Image 1 (tube, rainbow, N blue to C red):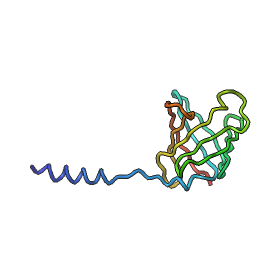
Image 2 (cartoon, rainbow, N blue to C red):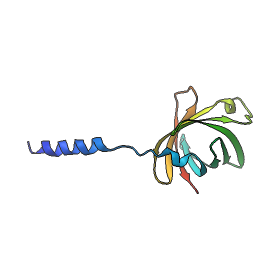
Image 3 (cartoon, rainbow, N blue to C red):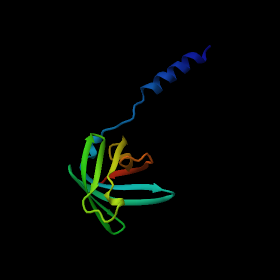
Image 4 (cartoon, helix red, strand yellow):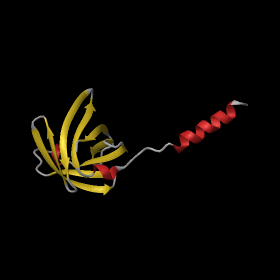
Length: 123
């Protein structure tokens, strides 16, 4: 019977926990990103404005338009696609934020398989 108040208090504390999402802080700026796919870590840097994103990865540069759906979700469209895969739009959703980073998930628009990554604000 003494465990009931402790359990009740624990339930109240856990139900008050809310994931932080201050997405507006990450709409523009310079970023460093890490994504792990099948055990391989991919790193890139990118600069984002309100309407475009330029990403630098493995000696290559990719430019995309950015369309914000809401404060935490956006769609990327490659400006000069070089193949069929680059013609597909990418949907990105910010899941959580800290003061200097955000965790996100992304996928091709219309696909259910999602990848996760972390981006760190550099400026």
